[in-house]
Amino acid sequence: MPAELLSTATITATGLLCKAFLNSGLCSITVSNLHILLDALRNDERRRHGQGVVTVANHISTLDDPLVWGTLPTKLCLNSNTIRWSLGASDIMFTNPLFSAFFRNGQVLETFRGNGIFQPSVDIAIKRLNEGHWVHLFGEGKVNQPPDYPRTNGVAHLPRFKWGVGRILMEATVPPLIIPMWLTGFDKLMPEHRSFPYKYFPRLGSRLGVAFGDPIPVEEITAALRAYSYIPLVTEDGAELKLNDELHPGGCVGRTVMQADERFTSGCEQKRQIEMARSDVTAIVQRAVEALGRQVSGNLLDNSP
Image (tube, rainbow, N blue to C red; front, side):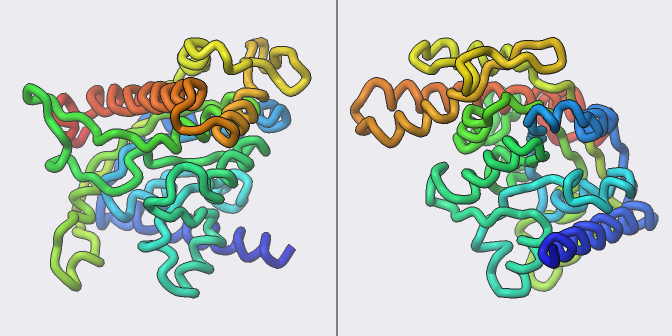
């Protein structure tokens, strides 16, 4: 109980501080379609059935999280069950005992770059989804600002998303609700490559934007998995799960993927197909985030609304 109270206190204080900054006049912010996320978080039926929520966004500054969540209603900031879990880099956010305690109490899972997709933070993220919680992901795994985006024929693209995105989605017991997001202006607030000490201070007067897209249809994910027919798309009891009048195959997908990875050597066809499935699922999510980005920011992905 004390740990839970400390976590709630950390989340509440951080959320209120972010709201105060966004409403201070030191910057401006435009939020589009926030109701999509709020409807998901307030859906008690979803949570009872163990369906989690995943938000996935571009990552353009070190202040994206937690500042972006200052856009949430105050009531949600007072409850740790309605605040996201996220993954944070060990070498940036967990560098000393004070930072480590703060971020852990703020529902950030310590993630070690270079340790791959099978590490405790990813396991815990899957567990939180299976409990009906909200997990936020930055698919790129690091900050990438628009001038550094790769371009093809004058069209910008996000850097490739990490396969951990695919693993988390594939191994959730019930396919989660996946909501793409697009952030703008945060790169102007906290530009990269500034010298000390200026790199630690936000630039005031920035115009920020947060857009939420429609959830990715579960059929897109399951269609990608059905291409690999050895993965049984059934629930734990061997039947499809009916949730909100829709069929959501899930359950054994995650266990089968994990067991296959443990059993098969790198040269086996089954392991190769699992990796291809992860890649395909991750690509579906990246395309959804990038498509929202083009709606908001154009083909160069760098315009504010």
